[in-house]
Length: 149
Image (cartoon, rainbow, N blue to C red; front, side, top):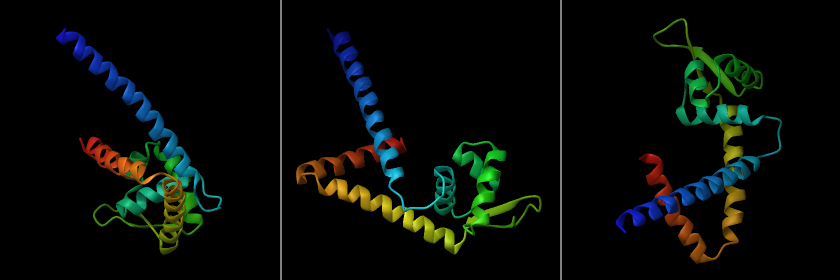
């Protein structure tokens, strides 16, 4: 009897995991689509976001964070540099490397991007009932706890 209970709980957790992962993936995709009109690609916006959050990274660190190969990151960074969104500075201890950081213009573009995403999500949340928003607030706390584990 006890074994059946453990199996049922595991199956319930697996179903919840699939449902939750699907919902998070779809929501993330939709939030990513809510951005100011512009011609930056998702990869470029993602790299700019990573630099904004980290402050500064080497190209290799940025490639690792973005989970792309260094040659791919070189192309992405080149496009961001061409637009004046990212700047290179010499590495303080290793002359063979450079440090990448968002420029003032890059920070402005990032802020516009964040504002558009937050406005879209806030609009969707405003359509929910107070109880639904309260449930999502609690779920967000739990998801942060899971993410930190």
